[in-house]
Amino acid sequence: MKKRVLAMTCAAAVAAAAVPVYGAEETTDQSVQPKEEVMATNLGVQVNEVPVVFSGQRPVIVDNVTLVPVRGVLETLGVTVAWDAQTHTITLTEGEKTGTLTMDSDVFQTGDASVQMAAPAQNINGSAMIPLRAVAEYFGAEVGWDAASRMVVVTKVPEVQYLAEDTYEKTLKDENGNLLAEVKAIYPVMTAEVPETARDAVNKNIAELTMKTADTYLVEIKDEVTKQAAELGEDFRPFQLVISYEDAFYGRGALSYLTTVWEYRGGANGITKCVGKIYDLQTGETKSLRDYINLQSGLTEREYMVQVFRRNMASNGEEYLEDAAQTLLDDHTNLGYYLKDEKTMVIFADETTLKPHSASIVKLEIPVKK
Image 1 (spheres, rainbow, N blue to C red):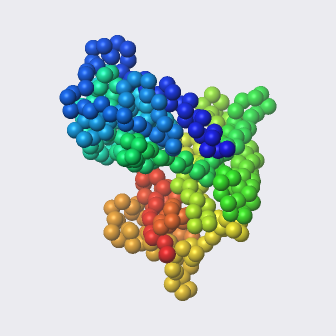
Image 2: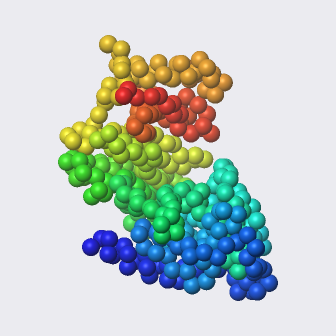
Image 3: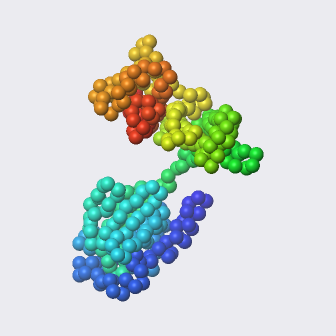
């Protein structure tokens, strides 16, 4: 059934997919006839086993390189295609991925990287034509060739979404309805694609902990913010608490991420504090640093993290505050850790504790044991 639905969806998408990149006003002036080396063939393209229907220019071969219409194939893959007539460039976007093509250039630009294509992007009969492989692979597809059917075979397996997010917001107002404080919390949620048994329990724990933190904050600051609002009048600025997360990672039977808590109580800047989390998705319990790092016998987790920072200070002392070494020994200095990916553990310290405010959260990466 899924396969049938996919086929119907793709067929509907590609029926109108051969619209040229050029606008109507450019087509007449800029369209060119194929060069002599272009061979009219019965080439075809299929995406996830569904043939792409070309109502205009079809795929061709130029100097032994197969060229396909940009829109006809890439939009079927879920890539948005945008044409800039002034610069003669094509911008391709899918999610956070963006790439650009320039007509008559064989360079596919992706952020800071340049990928050499087998031939330049070129105009044939009003359609922008490109060699497909480099571009399709950048957007997560595989490209093959079926010689028997003379078919370009494109396959893209949909990415499984293991993590989503949820939001919790709350405000505190005075008796006249004036805003005194507001909280916005964004936290990770594992989707139903995560198979581990403790998934739902961990999701519940994360949500409850986040909401409790937000609610407790508003109770704790009520008297202070009410007093400050009365004293400052029009100069008063509402308190804020923003709870968010970064570097979320699901793998090795665990969920890990860094929680950031930014608090503003007046003044020029707020303060950010951090909490690292690693949940065991079989038990629902939190995992320790020892589960991933070989600690010397008798060495505590904090002592190990202090050692990591000391080694970095010895090599990069100019990056740290003058009193950073002493601050590091203070038990009140917040240090923590989380799993960034399967091979990397991050040891962190709150911003402004060891480095200047401009450096933000201090993070050091170390490899985990296999």
